[in-house]
Length: 242
Image (cartoon, rainbow, N blue to C red; front, side, top):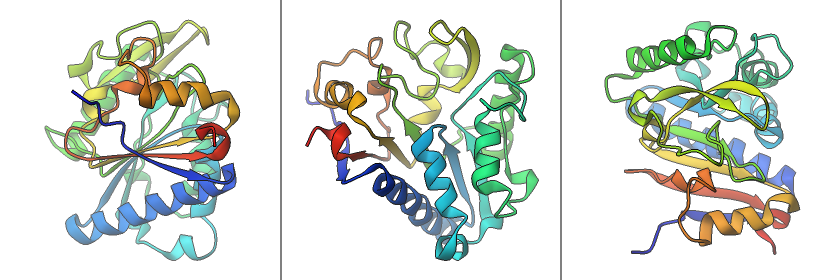
């Protein structure tokens, strides 16, 4: 059986990937708000998403949707306080959440300052309370590391560990750090998933993830395969190897 690796869109430069990511956010949000009255998005950390978030807070994009209808979630978080420089929440809040005055009640941050296991359970409860017993994001935004990790699903362990829990605490050996991450069950339930990948340091990994043998313990990004949704890769020419 052929594995569906999703659609690959290639852009000249990282700035173009960031713009495409911002526009994917807005297009998906417009559709979700028109169809269901609200938009639930799971954010990614990283340089390109940060640039995309900054674009959302500027110019015509800032006025393109009703931001009061947007509900923000996070795909993963480092176990640090929300004002820590490594916090994905701090990054996103500074890049666009605060500037767009998204209601505090609509911003569902992972409490990285709490005990990791407790924080993971609390986030699962929050997601279910706000999105229902079978939670489904309208959009999941992801990045991919040079090692093939995504969210905080790292090589060397089964990404399906605690999958039914929806959210789990994971210790990153490479970073010597606890993290909280959504599991594939929740990520793959999304209506749309979009990866943003840039740089020549990810060329070989991107090819292996999309075209190589299925081995998600080595390349956790391969586990991302929406059950009833779309999968899109946004890559610059360097990452795509063209």
